Image (cartoon, rainbow, N blue to C red; front, side, top):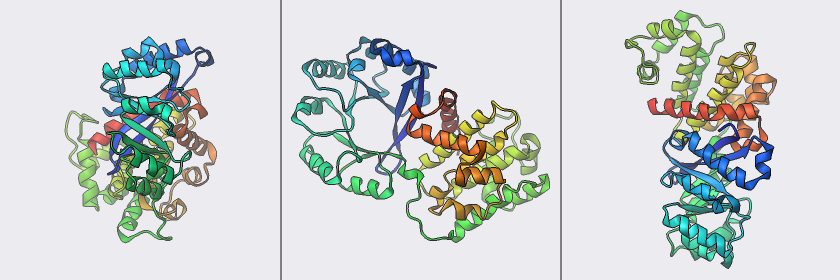
Length: 389
């Protein structure tokens, strides 16, 4: 699997719940990129080795396919029940390809047409496709509305991709799209001014108290125990299968003794974030992936504060959770200067790492091999955590 670097992008349904992931990939070996027959074989092997059920959290996985990939016999080794094969926009729909897609469809494979712009040449493939992906950066909403109306007699599902704002999501939902891809959910929906509402202000104060750099054992215990909801949820989480302690943890004092200050601060922050927003669950999952990936990357250098790296990833979605500028939120949370600078300015080693992680989410071509190697581990860890929250 180390011959390809993967990143996954969530695909959400109308209710902003997770429907599937698209897996973006690139060869880590330039020689693979130059030899299509070898690339197809190794790609299929890498997808199988990756363990799609774990990597996609038992959701459907969209995988881009070139003309050469589709024509390759190796493609038939892929699991039909887990995959949607995306036909790239630069594919020429010639008779050989159409026959091949028809044959694969009869074997149970499902297809999506990527970055779709209508022409009659695509009619045979429209009949075979399950999903059409509309790239908002290529075609206008009016062009896409006309296309959706033209094909409304079919059972085609329309997916809007490169959705960059909640306004785009609502507009394309209203013209008939059922699926949405893009990191619009990781951005503030509407900036509602320069202050937090009362509920979130109290939670922000709680985050502030938990994350005091020099907080003592007793101060942390008292802070958590003064919030019944946090106490209940934290103990519930620490007694989940994720930890599997031989004896149940029955008090915050016991939890801090066993796990230590830094770990309890980490999990208390996570539980508090979960309680702060009604945003799509995928936003918290994204924060968890960033947090774990930052920690994994920092762990390769003993001089770096891996706990701080974890916290920077976890808090990187605060503005989207609260629909409030990050600079305003952080005024209420006395974080270590290194973490604040990383979040606000992407400065320092921590800031550079966070920036690389966010770039990898959009384009695995743009980041290091080391980051790619740790990415799927972070995804699987985040999926496990989400099951316990």
